Image 1 (tube, one colour):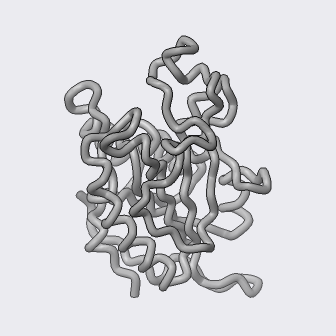
Image 2 (tube, one colour):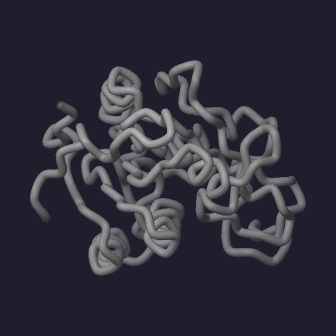
Image 3 (tube, one colour):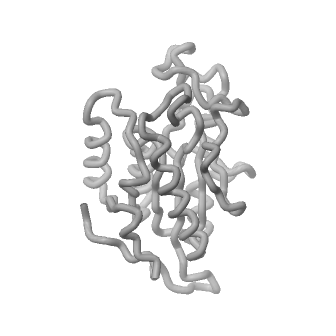
Length: 213
């Protein structure tokens, strides 16, 4: 694990832009991905209180917040029923697609829908769009965001793809190791995903070691 990251000075004012250039991205904290759901991550419930605490701190320190959700059409090729790899889950508008009932999202949180295209897996948050149709990358660049803190589900799929895409686009990335959980379809998938994210340049860190000021 790399050294702690101080989040208090991630940018300087430029053209009246606030100094904070940090965003918290919460990935797919939905009912279907938590115990009892259609595609449950075994420890999915455990990350919710961790990420609620981080979200409160992020809001206090003026970070931008996003929460992604799988928002698949019922006929998505992502599903086994249409030739894909996964059981039907997070179908747009269904109870399983709702955010976990214990998740506490500030009202200002930007909701990013992904997996909307029936021909797309939609693993990465960068495949998603905000309610007005703006892509996440465009919105991050518009706001001058430079650093993403990422947590959510699942480590070896949507978190992994999101982190690797973020690094590809040049963002500094901190992955919250106590705010993620793996599916581990094959033993060790989660560990291998963490290693891949680290090699890509992401910082792996527990939430309690974030220094906000």
